[in-house]
Image (cartoon, rainbow, N blue to C red; front, top):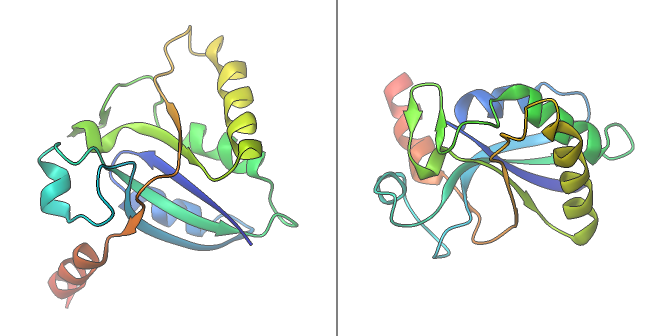
Length: 148
């Protein structure tokens, strides 16, 4: 199994879309790219932790390639809006690809470069090394309690 992490606005919609993608084994919401190892939703919303709301996926590369997942990521959101997706505004809603190794970095950079012409040089998607990922445990608990 391979892993990938993507930030593209609020994490609920992307989590659902990634989980339905053939070859994705697991999708979970969390936070990544911040200044500390663990954080909470409330802390992230202050904009002071530098974490992005993200979806972490595990995928079977025999079924789907990392390149196909990156292309899906770019189709799923607007990579030209800085720190904003739809009504969600703030640094935690930025467009970002978090890579696990140099190969993932190269693939993400290549696809982003190929899309720059399509978007008239306005792609603001960051490509960064995965740092301080943590699952959004407390947010899941609050969300589930509200649904019950």
